[in-house]
Length: 185
Image (cartoon, rainbow, N blue to C red; front, side):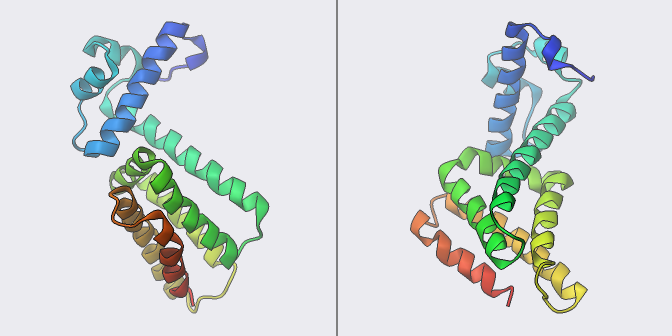
């Protein structure tokens, strides 16, 4: 179902947005696997049949949420990229940005974490961004760089979850970013 949202009435746009918002909250809370059409509809205050006016199935809804989430992350990275040249400082700023977002926007980061475990495009985006920064400075062999890229992406998501859960206070974020940067040599 390929829907042009510009063609929707204002009420239909609000309903579709309510379903998307409910899906984001459900994914962040329970993960993709735990999400159901009924739970999304209930949270959105929308009847089940209305759901199917906007989305073919739950997978189509998750795909849209994932795409929007990836675009949002990419936009944040791009803003940082405009301000700094590639390299260690920009990698450090990107890692810091994600962890600080975990403190400021816990639901959004839980959504990213949950989506990253089930949808490859989210984790691929993190890998791509980290890889681009690592390429700006030599990190041994290509195999070493790939291992470091995977380590940083997984560590970042793990730390973000800990920040959301309140196990890492905001004032310790910079210290954890420094630890990750030490792994870069």
